[in-house]
Image 1 (tube, one colour):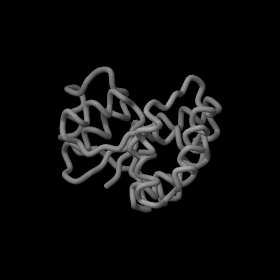
Image 2 (tube, one colour):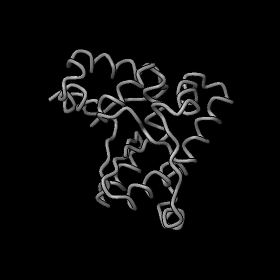
Image 3 (cartoon, rainbow, N blue to C red):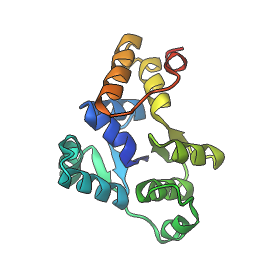
Image 4 (spheres, rainbow, N blue to C red):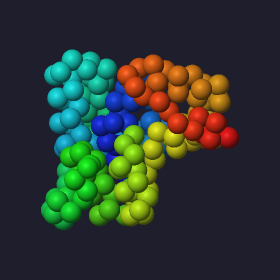
Length: 166
């Protein structure tokens, strides 16, 4: 199962390329914990209309699907770092508790926690690299994606662009 947090969904929704998350995850379904669903809904209510496609497919039970937390996952959340937001904590708890899950994130703290705790995760750099390595995009298309992402998010700087395309 592929679990996504709000940050990575927002990054690709801003450039209207959510399809790339499914390509790199090699699945037709990405699961969203309750807190991520809530964060997306709040974003739409605050005028972040680029997130609406996530809500639309969630209610249609295609592409994005709800995933509920098991009791043991709920109990894990208070022990996770306070620096993580609710959606990241829920997603990581699911991945820690259920073997074989992957976590998609654009949050450095969440990614660092995943690495330290052997949670299989893909951050923005790894997603961008995998897009061209797996043949979903050319290097030039990935360069354009990086430019589009940086232009779409105020203050966003993708570090290590050469490393991504190496």
